[in-house]
Amino acid sequence: MALFIFGCTWQSQGQDLHFSQFLYSPLNLNPAMTGNFDGRYRVAFNYRNQWRAVSRPFQTTSISGDARDFLNVKNLGLGALFYYDVAGSSRYRTIQFGIPVSYRINLSKDSVHSLIPGLTPSFNHQGIDFSQLNFDDQYNGTRYDPNSTTNESFQVNRQNYLDLAAGLAYNLELKNGIRGTLGTAVHNIFEPSEAYLMGEDISLNRRYTMHAGATVPIGLSFFITPGLLYMTQGEYKEVMFGGEVNYVTSPAPYRYRAFFIGGWNRGKDAAIFDLGMYYNSWRFGINYDINYSALNVATNNRGGWEVSIIYILRELLPKRANFKHCPNYI
Image 1 (spheres, rainbow, N blue to C red):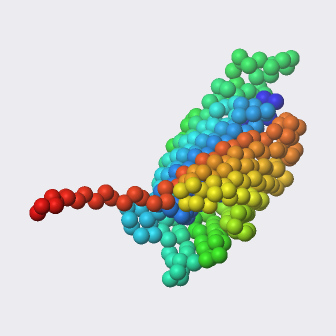
Image 2: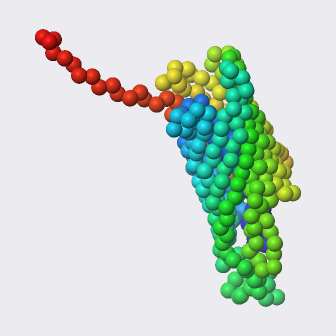
């Protein structure tokens, strides 16, 4: 088990964070999603907790905020992105702070078609606690001795580096309420070094992403939100698809209420079920992953749970106009 936990932790160095609710973690998904929403300001919170049954849970927290037409500069999107990820027994942690920026290019006068390029320069910190790991040379021939020293030679226990992500998104907005986004992105463009052992040369592979999402009305009270994600990073690939059925109970702009339930599949790994609600400018979602890959021997089919919260400020309040009231007798 000790070697298995170490292997899971070491493997995590080769892969970036991911969320099952990928459509609702927009700035992590693609820099081109910055400012790509219906409103003026948006704040997103995501939290994921997984593999509790295997070892210490892998936990990921992300907080982001972005603006459309930032500082009233038409078509300019600007945001801030922070995430913290800690994985496994070694407490392998990743911290990132990025400044995503995008620019909307309208391809038609009625804004039915638009193209959005985006960039996210970021500062990254990674660290690992080797004292929490177990190694095979701590086995003395008859038993495992956690207090014995190891002959492993570690170069460093932390890394700091700058990196860059780039992306492109295409938006389609039709008058019948159908909206769709198709995007592609590449992360870890600089392929920074992640070497911790002496003599090793390990780089963080570029991550390539393609994604699609849509909102399709069905009558007056229902709409569906299908989505598709394909990611590849080094030898790892991930395909995820599914959707949600949404039921609107109150369509009024300032009393908007809707509930949703959905199902997703991450190829050869997990089935995912989610539910939540829209409440005015808020969206709340929670999901649970049921693991069915070969890892289910250790996880007992328990993958992890995840929460997403999004708030969108759609309109700014107008400035208060001050008038002097003249007396009636003047």
